Length: 357
Image (cartoon, rainbow, N blue to C red; front, side, top):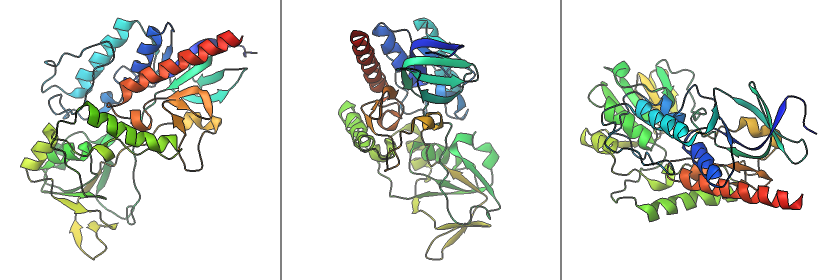
């Protein structure tokens, strides 16, 4: 029995980034009418929060949403944080999607009956299926290194980076081996007094066009881990750094001279295990993100390995739940395909349940 004030619904999609909108599109194609709950104030997903200095001509990997071609001539030197949300807004309105925002989901629980209850400050819904597409942007990963609390300079994560001017004349250490680090280095070089680039592993530079086959292979490598219930690694960790605009700019400025990861922070900089030290005024942690899944904790989905076992997008321990924007679909490479897979799984689940009834 559904509690008073709880609305019964077929499908709830949590999150309106690329993965969530892709899922909603295919659900509509399959004859379902999903309710999309989004925690942000407006459309755009994580793109809303990118640095204003990340312009469209620097962006590497904005994929068209399904059923819609983005205008490749639009944007140029305009911030991606303005252009992409406008594209998403037009997409939502064009499809006539039911999107409620800002709605932050606090918990997903089992019951009543064969449904999952989605609870938020704006209401509760008893759904026959849930597609979770909450992404990673709200959970920046800060790795721990000894001495971090003693460092007297500034530390920030890439999620809080807003451009090079605030680092003018400073000595900056940039940590991380992905495109985010390359973006920061490409802008700081020549503005900061000096930059150091440190990574845990030697970076892999790609000089191919990273076509469809290569993208599918990268996604498949990440997918192997989530099938085994292990925490997902980022897609970029298996793709390497392609020849993007920011990578080329950073390379041309001599900013991609990589050093191995330091062992600790000191009050005035960073130090390596061999005793080498470098002074620094700031550290930018371009160290990626983790999946924002705290609201799923009541379902107790974590495997002994620390991850959530997923077959494609379907959670092994809870077939009524699809995870998109998780593991292989956490990047723009796999999000659209994951949306179709999730929608197909939901259609099959609901069709089987209807026949059984």
